[in-house]
Structures are given as structure tokens and as C-alpha cells.
Length: 121
Ligand SMILES: [Zn+2]
Image (cartoon, rainbow, N blue to C red; front, side, top):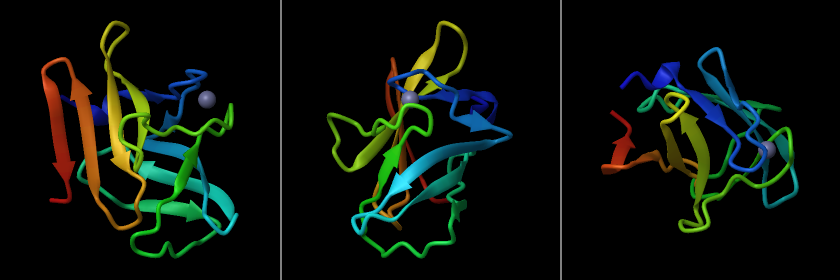
């Protein structure tokens, strides 16, 4: 499965969150600081860039918001995970979960066959 070719969408407003191999989300920290994060869409690649430049504290749980509708894109089931929609094709849509905890490099893709796990390689 070529994940980098998939499009990622907001679970609320369905706005496209990915472009040019990156997912862009708004962030909010406990101290009220807001910004934007760019995540690589290649799973196992946990490089990201953040505007403004921010050093997240290891273990800090960051809030992720859709830049379009400003809703949290958090999983109802797994509170410390963000959840967005991965469109593989028009009829195949998977949930992608990734950890909201800074430094915790865990991503899951929920497919009809079950859950695939991705960690740092
Ligand atoms: Zn949205």
C-alpha cells in the first residue's frame, strides 16, 4: 500500500489536510500556545516541522485541530490519539490514528482487516 499517495481528510468537515507529502494540522499546547505542524505522510517517518519553532516536552500531549473547521481531530475511543481519515480510493477510507504525546512515535491504520501498527524503524 503506497500510503504517501493517499489523501488525508478531516473527520468533521472532510477538508483535505495533506498536500505534497505532508499533513498540515493546527496545534494547541496546554500553555495555550498555538501553531501549525507539518507531518510527513510516509509512515515510519516521524520528522515534522512546526510553526513557530517549538520544542515539545517529551510526554506532553498536544491537541491537534483541523485548520479549516477548528474542531479537534482526536479519537473518541483512544483519548491520547489523533484520528484523521485516509482516502485510499473513493470507496476505501481508513482511520489513521497517531499518538498526541510528544516523543511517542506510534501510528495505527484501522483497516477492515484489523489494525496495522507503525512505529519508528
Ligand atoms: Zn475540519
